[in-house]
Image (cartoon, rainbow, N blue to C red):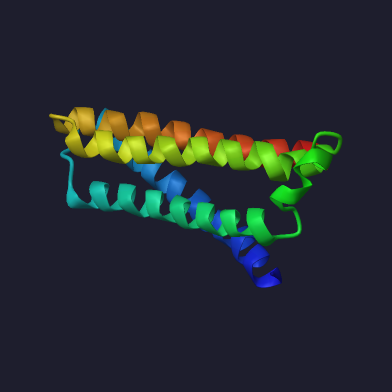
Length: 141
């Protein structure tokens, strides 16, 4: 189980890096009135895939890891346990959904400007939720 825990911890940095890249690329594309390119589409795909993989690793941990769903009743009285068993997974599902909405909206928007705007808004919101998870975790220590 230690390997999966470590993989989840390491993969978060890849997720953060992908988030920074895709949000900045969408913002510069939108404000710079650039064409929507294959690179823009691939970056969105990579971002959503990285989040999907992180979520699947986290789901494995939620079922069989040291903090698993069988401890939910005890989680309410323990801020750290509540974070890992409830708050973190729920917020990650929100981030995942926002990333997928952004991917879908950016691919189907009519103009290049609308594609970049949709990508920026939804990938940006997804990334902000992920940052919120990090901030919450730092405050629980």
